[in-house]
Image (cartoon, rainbow, N blue to C red; front, side):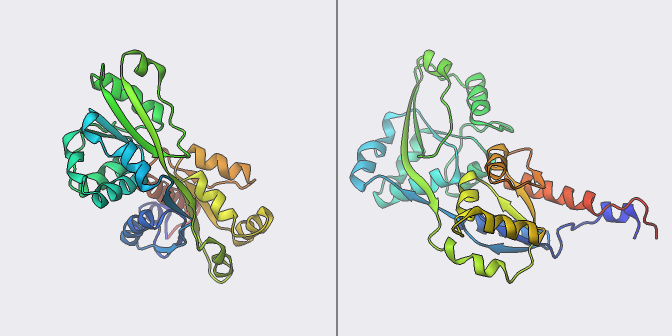
Length: 279
């Protein structure tokens, strides 16, 4: 087969076994995309979002949506847990009364599928700073009050100039992302399967994956001995792997599952491009 035939292969991930380490909800969405690529996804959810506030605290801090002009969702997890709380307390209709901003398009899709309209999503943000910068440029936020329900592990920094112009942002940490309850049971299964790719979408998933064994060296040994390639969704996740002394094969240029899949497709095409091969 000529090099041009390989480069033009319609399904470069066909029959590639791809290990998914995200939340159960995220994995279901990624599986659908990988099935379209004729890949073989394997689910090992390493993380799960959990509320860290009591029902009473949630009602006190997050129930009075009507007093806010905007609400920000920086992740699908934040919206899904918040919506679950609203439904439980029959408050979900209040979310239609305020404007919703999302950092990424995948979070936007999740919220729209739930029946809500989005007032702002930046084009292709890579960081929370880029989100806030674009938001301030395109929307008049002077004197507005913004609810920001987020994870305990959130690294989003609220820019000072946003607050200086009179915008009041109320960040509330109401959930955490914890290791999945079954993560310790995955290691034995890894030894019995051949894996082509290992996908990580967060530093928390990296740390949880390594927690399968008492020490990191056992996980590193499996990674290096199996020859598995590793893809990440962004720089913070790549940094978490670097801290574990594990190199990555590729990093998505944008924080999106679709971008990550396109990135590993491009990697597969280049890796299998033998310019000296002819028909």
